Image (tube, rainbow, N blue to C red; front, side, top):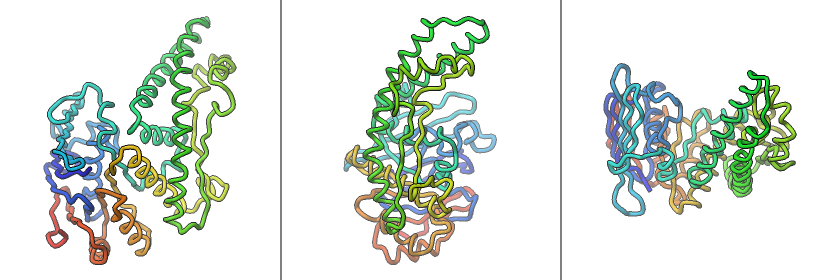
Length: 372
């Protein structure tokens, strides 16, 4: 699978731009703030129906323009192309289409055009709280498991209703066990399935993650990911029953898979506290490469890979190693942003692979002709 053509209108700092891409490697070169990352974000929209960086769709519209539009043509396994379109009018509902047909639910699109993005923001996986890690792994699983995504949506709706009920109990100074049991049964039903899938997923994912971390670091450290869940110790229904007094006091559901976390470990210690900057960067890159491999194995074709400014503070040999890696047949179409044209151009003199280089200048893009 690859993205053959991209057209963006009034998106972030672009009034209009159109690209015809190589089906292997495409690089965007320019100064910081020129708009390189915005192109990757447009591609991300076409896979996930949202920005990687800014969840407020209206804020991605150029200045005072009335809308933004993103159009992309995809090719899968030699078949005809699929046209995917995203239209966001200011202060209106987002419209998403495939081959001019509207989606009733955006969740129906997730997973059709799998994509993995590696960005400096990924260090948030280490430095932020458990919610960031849960959302990341949930997004990975949801790309290939529609039932999991539906269960997650239904669980969160039930959780919201249970929390509203707990607050109403506190305000009215009464408690109705039968009313809370309605939402308990739904939390248990969907939560146990989510827990089971997360656990099974991590068992397969960890070995891929360890392989790529060894590749990046030449096996210098040992790493692991631990699944931290209250359900590891007790059945969900028992947890809810045991915490009901605490829930009534806090007006919030304190037990469940919405409290799960993933512990990132390096040499038996938390990478957040004991990992160097370089170790943390290698950790998250390995996680994302493992995501790529896992998604490829599930779907039977290669996801698109976006590498946003990941070469910063890496030596030339490490950069070359990563370029060689994504040039391998195990990887498909890759998009790269970098500030240094000379670095990429020199590497492509040594690596024989189809590629295109685009120069980005203040929201305008031009193909560097001798890069084809």
